[in-house]
Length: 144
Image 1 (spheres, rainbow, N blue to C red):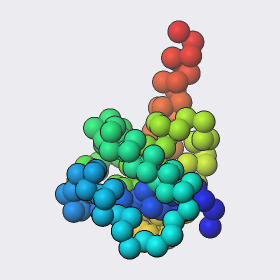
Image 2: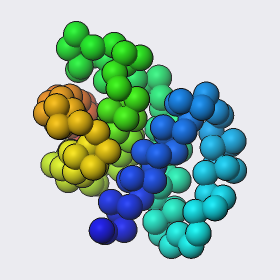
Image 3: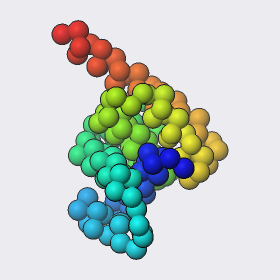
């Protein structure tokens, strides 16, 4: 497994802990890494970066997910799915140099590992729609 994939999985787990444990970001950061053993610095660093963007921009990320997940409220989604979406949208927003297709593909692979088969298509569709909106905004912004 690549460094970035491992980071994305760890970021998902951190978001899941914050979400279900109703824990603040600082508390998650303190407790998450305890007992994990040796995690390479670059893996931990990117996981922390994704988690930070997801937490700092949570309202915007949840709004995007809500808008693009037709007939689904974020709080009614499976916890794993909503946090896979949050991590991926955080990457789309916070790391715009990473190609949208890469972010979506990574989220799909993580969903295959941690979620249900039905979730894969759902996550793919929602992220594709969000990615197009974000790229559209960036294109308009670059023309101004």
